[in-house]
Length: 290
Length: 264
Image 1: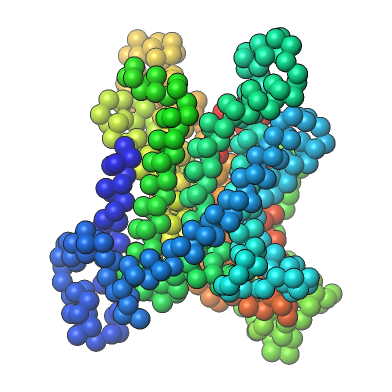
Image 2: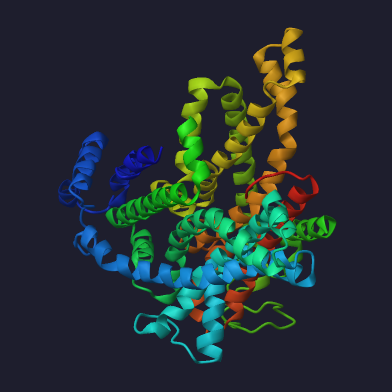
């Protein structure tokens, strides 16, 4: 299944390569010929696939630079941003979810749960602007946008982390609540283990398995969010690169970014599947029975 | 709880529908004497860099944001319902093939996929609807298919078959009504996300084209003025956030009330 997605993801949507035709109606015929857009759709598509197989995405219509080189240069920045966001979202999300599950039904649980729904409902580009307004324009403690030392990383990571944090809180809460009701937890309690040992050692260890999946899948939301976050904070990653491509209708750039983004996403899913396989013996057992 | 949310949503919906009556200014009415005015009695939410009344623009913007999200949700639901019913009931190779496509779509980062679609088609609100629906139907299809699969062998289906009902009749008269509550709850869960996707695509310039106001494009166009005139950004964004929040809470509430196990 995953391999199928991978092979499908790599050549991109066939229709995507068609966009070249619409790109430059007012540009002279010679450029069209240069870009091969005067050829038939199939020829263009085959040409694009050929390029892809060589690991290329063609050249930008505007800067005439190789898209693959630009993406390679910008990708580490996006990765840094995603890791920064993960560093905020994962510990905080697990902690809040755990707190909710332990204090289930109390004011703390209800408060955090409501906050997490709000977190899910905020548009990333707007919360980013509000964070910017607060930290750099009112408090004047962080630079508003651009790249540089670690201070520049704080606001974009925080913005990117918010929806992931909310998702993770919700999911770890329900996962833990489900686990608290499991027979093995009752057994552990019946053995006379302290409540703390039951909750922290027995339950938490088992909760990690489903949570690894969620954390991995959240990477996709980082890629989604990166397009918006990087644009707002002037972060020089592939998200902003894609956005600039969209504004200028620079199709090789847009397609390159989408293909790289989806490939990374699918690869991460694959890695998560593999990790899952190792973490949870039950999965291996079922797979063997099939 | 659910009642309260429904009331708030109705207010938002009615405010958008009756935007022409409620707003004091036209949404595209430029007034060069009142540029970037802070909120006042005359302009409750202030004015933007062209002197346009933000409240009026937010009200009119709601028409676009809400209708795009609602149409996308209804289209997603209908396609998903149909595909899920047929796929689950047919089983075998058809089912495997359809689920392969569904998994394939669900394996993609949704916004990137939607961006890809909105790039192929000319930008505009119909493109956004198509982009959202072409990704959205997959989760509905999976949900319905799962339900059909589990009730395909149920006694009432068997009974229907025994009295000579055709497959189509079983599908649409016996199984379809069973799936309706499921997909309605799912729609509630998804609508908040669709509002956000519409806003994001508009923010990226792929949605409603200027001067037509939509919440996402207002935030996008006004964000360079955030220092001088923060209200230009805050209010349209707030409209998105509150609407998305209401839909998310409605979805959660409905799911919990009917004890349905649906993953958002």
